[in-house]
Image (cartoon, rainbow, N blue to C red):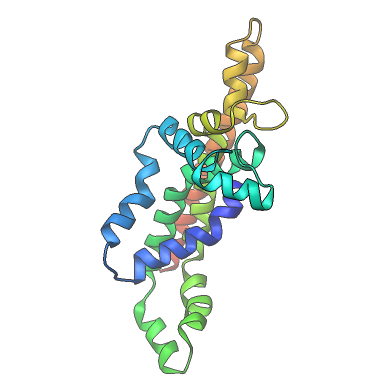
Length: 208
């Protein structure tokens, strides 16, 4: 779910950064990539302040729509997605910037609207970067710990992620074996995700 909601917002953000010039672009770019350098606990606490029941956004969502992000799996997906968002945006941005602008200009000359150019030329050519970015985002979201446990806690069956489950087993007497099993699963999934991402990038370079 974290990767799913990141896709549309991430593609839009990557397109803005790659193709558009506007005042404050450097600040916007810094904000997009800020989760990469901030401690995850800071991100989680910021989400709690904004999306908690008494937060600026959270109170509005709960009062008018009955939606609460804090301490449920929706919030876990939100926190994990935000931590993986910069990785996805960066990957897609680089792919969009690598698209031959002459192809886009030719499509425009033939009468295609900017939206048509994006969906028929830019996005298909940037697809390898989108796939690689989605894989990286998924791997980051899967291993996220600090932001999720701060924002939604560690509730089994509701907000517990593989990372928080490992932490819980480590703190439990006799839980070492279960923690090692989950560690092995997370290492395998992360390694496979990075391997696939690398293969996609190599394929993309080979096709140019």
